[in-house]
Image 1 (cartoon, rainbow, N blue to C red):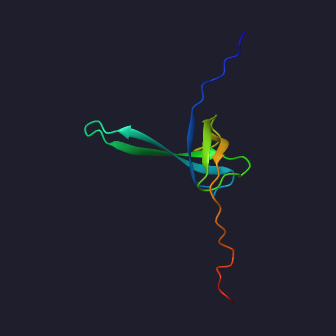
Image 2 (spheres, one colour):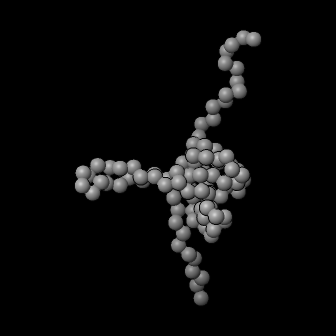
Image 3 (tube, rainbow, N blue to C red):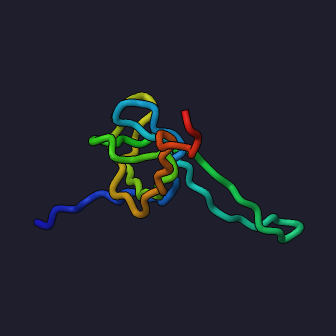
Amino acid sequence: MVEKTPHRKTRVGTVVSDKMDRSVVVQVSRYSVHPLYGKRITRSSKYMAHDENNECRVGDTVSIGEVRPISKNKCWNVLKIIQRAPVFDTDKDTGEEE
């Protein structure tokens, strides 16, 4: 007998918050067309996803996948980091002398 795997949804989005421990908020944007005017409209949804190793930063593009409920609001898991956000060091010298 062949074991059947469940169909799980996947989404690609941008991390907008990483302030929680092992959790990130991912914003997924999609386009839709207005029914009357035909203009493209950006629709977005925010998903709370589980990040086991706290690897994600704000601005990263990640792929998330649907899993069993982990907590009250989390039922998505970070599958992989597609693109890292650039890191800007604010600790470096600004060129001013003391």
